[in-house]
Image (cartoon, rainbow, N blue to C red; front, side, top):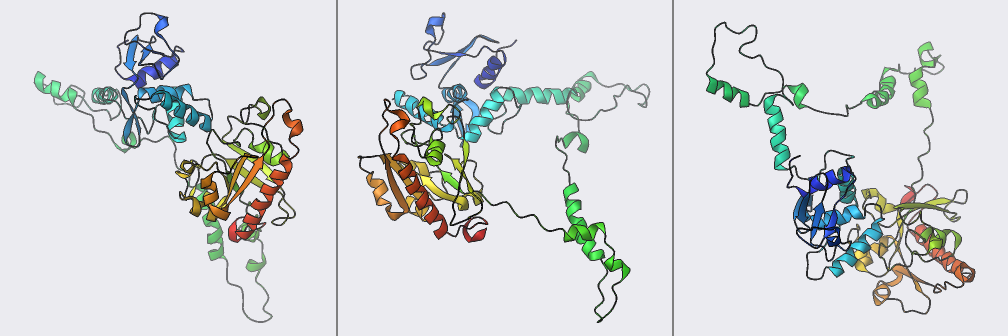
Length: 428
């Protein structure tokens, strides 16, 4: 197998062979002792399978983020952290960058980029919108098309049946013909794997066509209805069917992705549902919550809907938000760090807390950060007792009072912004 000078392709092949590369501090390692698990001191990435190769960790790759190529260290780090949650990945990247003082920093890939990269590296997809096609791949594809192995339509050679008898072609001209790219028709050029299905359009159109075909009813007083107008039809029955009530949109609560936050995805559900605070890194918080990107909790809000409990969505990043999702955000947990709002619709804290309630939770007895105090009445501050490992959850009886106070402020904020039993502000 020929050696490839592309680190992305080499990494993908090594993963497929179940022999991933290892980081090393030497440009030509001769033994396993050169390997290291610390990317802060590593300088190269050594591949043993399927080909023995070595690349500098600072080399740019074909993966493009924000119009700039991403270096191999960031790619390898993202693959190493493929199974961790977004907050843990961000925290690990920050810690590594601190250790890389004076060196090139690890680039923090957003959720969509990291997912696309891992999918491509593990072979689940053949293409990636963030990976630039290499010159070798383009040349190989052009050679296949030129030789007729891929694309194009078949042509009739000059020596085939139907050609003029006795016609000879100059060898040099034949060589040029062999190098020409074969032209294709619409069936070979318009490649697609998902044919569009318009059957739902026909079903919707039938409703309107049935109305236009229906004869007008007589306007004369006492006139007997015609047999055509009184006879039930499949189309008229479709029109008369009552509409199903639209599903009520779920309000959204945003958490802080900061590693210093007392409330994260691992412990927020137990805190808001049972009124018990458990440290996010504690084993009592459970292992399932640490990798979850979205959680749901139900809470009865009688002043908004006395018959049905409201289901709240809990997320720590708005990366997958649609534009209308921001109208459903009712509360934002914050640690006072303004970088949390960089990807928000309202990046200025005063504007954000005009649309959603801000919530700061800190330790009892410690001062509230000055930034939180400066945001004014739009942010409510709450304090919980410091965690005592010796007592565990047995001494957390005051947490429930704190949680009920938070829910009370959330309820007041939702009512003031027009939330009703049908949904968001204005009954939408």
